[in-house]
Length: 115
Length: 111
Image (cartoon, rainbow over all chains, first blue to last red; front, side, top):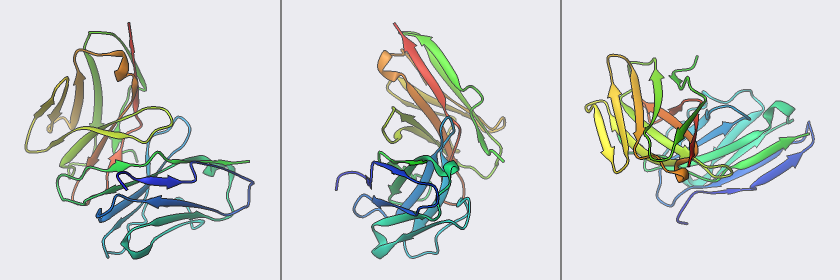
């Protein structure tokens, strides 16, 4: 598609449940990122995929969080045993990965509310 | 450890005047800097960027200034318009493609 597509746009879940958030990057973009924005906070880096390289998982807040990118395209962010502090907007972005001129294009985000 | 800092959470400016948004960073390895703009319920959109080999980049009403020795950059919007009201994030990257974002500044442009 023309832009980065994320689903669902809104998700309300109960504490302890697992959730999956999906990201469809721009076709041909080799780099894919997940960020999250908690209420009143900035954009917190979570994980970054670049081509076939091992992902940079340094931003994942706990081992309840994981992400995969299948076939170098679609990515799924999974949060297991959700907690109330996981409530945030989860933003996916993709880029061409061009060094020194790396402009990320973001999706509209998936708003997660954990009750 | 906040490597990119936006110390002003909000800014209010009259229409037609200049808006100046500031950003400081701590990592001397950062060599590429960007500003993003975010409206409610939308993803951030790219506004303007600057590499460390330059100290100024201009695009229409938007100019970004970089002071490497002070590890400081600023975004100037002139003249400010009501449609500029949004949250502005600065971001930086170094020897990886990972962008580190600041906490954002909410700009309100009033008539």
